[in-house]
Amino acid sequence: MLNFLRGPAASRQGIASRWWRPQLSTEALIVLVSAYFLLACNGPLWDAVRTGTSSLRVLLSLGVAVFALHSLLLGLLCWGRLARPLLALLLVVTALAHWYMTRYAVVFDAEMIRNVLHTDVAESRELITFGMLLHVLLLGVLPAVLVLLSRPLTRSRKRALLLRCGFLLAMLVLAGGAVGASSQGVFALMRSDKVLRYKITPGNYMVSLVNVLKPSKKGGSGPVQKVGTDARRPPEALTRKPRLLVLVVGETVRGDHWGLNGYARQTTPELATRGVLNFPDVSACGTSTEVSLPCMFSVSGREHYDRDAIRSHESLLDVAARAGVGVLWRDNQSGCKGTCARVQSETMGPDAAPGLCAAGRCFDEILLAGLQARIDAQPGDALIVLHMLGNHGPNYFERYPPAFARWTPVCATPELSRCAQQEIVNAYDNAILYSDTVLARLVDLLAGQQGRDAAMLYVSDHGESLGEYGLFLHGAPYAIAPRQQLHVPMVLWMSPGFVADDRIDMACMRDAVRKPASHDNLFSTVLGVFDVQTGVYRRDHDLLAGCRAR
Figure 1 (cartoon, helix red, strand yellow):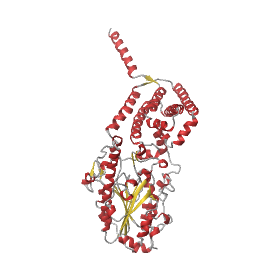
Figure 2 (tube, helix red, strand yellow):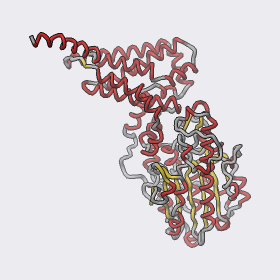
Figure 3 (cartoon, rainbow, N blue to C red):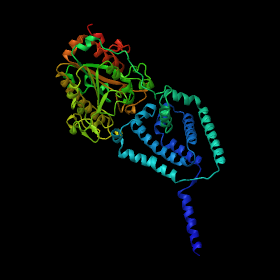
């Protein structure tokens, strides 16, 4: 009797289980997930396709090809018990990627993946918003739960392998047929939009991640290769008055918002009264700190850019130190990206000036805290690098104290798409205004040096998009990056003693600054300041060489 009563209940539970936990093969799940990716997570792709062509045939062919290629890729990756957890993970990560693609027009190429992998905790925290969490929950977590709730079909290994091979072959044929049906239109679309393939999600970040993680063809696990082993300074450089160069690396400041470059707003009022030399036409090595920072300190530069070579060779700092120059790196950002690995360095934090720090970030004035003591500790020639937080986005409104909120209203959220462009610009310009004050205070400190000649060279690592062409932030592929991400400010200040001792013709310099310059000039200019003689020094790249009376 008891078993009889249990029968219908058990039957009902079985029906409920089949309803809430349907039994699906891995191939069926892959098809469903690939279709979901195509329809729900590729808005930027379809927006770009509609802009590039009005052909319905091309649109359909590309859609079928994207579906089939994702199915093929997932079919190669998802096996056995790991299939469902892997698909669930991809759903969540794809929802996250979709958020940044739609809100900031992020392009997930290899360099962007490197930026993501090297993002620190403070930077990541600023990018976490309620809107982002809700987006990932609805678009990623809920579908992932449904995938995990499904029950797998039980098959023999032989049958499962045969079915998977047939599935992969079918997807390969489907992808080939779809592309072949409109090959001329599809390839024309790809040629006209160089980043279209990086908008195909999740294939974009998956392929880019593989490219980042695969071993370099040139290696990179061996010792760092030396640069400028012949570096030395002539006897007269060792007996003259010591020189101090403070090299300030700005962050995310674009040249067309720099007051000294003729911007409609005077964002650099303090520097305008300090007699600095302004370089109005300067190009960056890259569009992200991950690229630009190692590049600007390398002997290769953008002219001979090779990421693996740059990472495997010593930097400008190593060459200067080898020649006997005291080198110090002070950081208020996310590190030196390997550039300062072999010289003295320090990361600024609340201990240096508690009132300048909050929530894991410090205002850039902290770079000046205790700086005089660091200068005094260097008896001879010294090169000190200050790495600023500057205008690091999207939280521009947090990069300056309230007293510098000259232009209002400001965008007070990292979700830039929720703000009017003028509000974004206001916050961004206020941050530059604050950097101007920090640099002016640094100039004043250097002007008061006793017993040594001093100079300051400031240059930003890259620019920033503030909504132009639908782009925000930075990190666009270099080949198609807008000028807003590549045009950066640069200024030079020299004490009268420095000018006289180095025999610099200031009238000549005021003419020279009008010429185009780039991060590639940094390497030889710094070596020239300290009279370092080496075969890797290039006089034509030294910004001061043509105006020295020698």
